[in-house]
Image 1 (cartoon, helix red, strand yellow):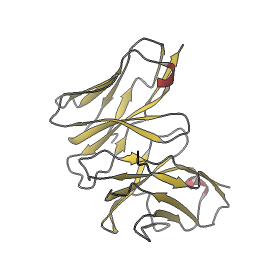
Image 2: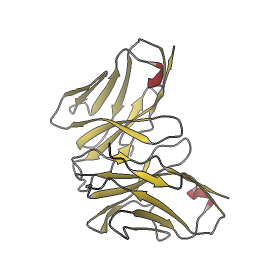
Image 3: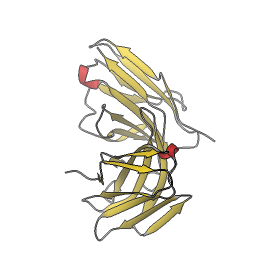
Image 4: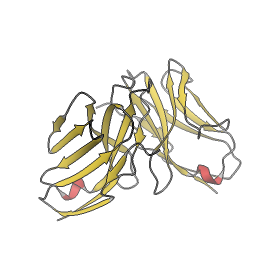
Length: 113
Length: 114
């Protein structure tokens, strides 16, 4: 079964606008993490939110978690051209002992100046 | 700021050849991971490593794969006899905590099997 699924698959916005992407999962989690990947590059950790947390902020990023709906959202406020990247959610299951990340397929965000 | 490094950045090999991908995790981290990403697909977990042994592995991580931490700093992934379908980006990651902590990823090694 697919653990993390992002929505939408692609998002195109103008600089200054907000970008929101969602992640749904199926199985109970210990935590959920968001990563950014610029084209052909490595994964950069953005935020980790634990199952007992509902919201976290980091700079222009805001992440929410609704465990009753098994979903999370990532909001990028006042987007910049440099935010152009793919964004992935990744979950660590409650049953996992070693921190294995299960990634979604990602949302490709394009921010045009 | 400490970071995970990987070498080489790009490896081209012939089918059936052995390859070794190298990673230097962040020095005080205790948990180590390999993931791969086939072009256009999602990132997939391969293996986790803790206390000098494999703690968990996926179905992808068959007998052709092995990992080692030979000298307390390097962390390697070996593929004994590469197949065309092994072509992918391979990422190493390390973490201070296990399941509760964030993982720091290296820049990846792009493996191309011809």
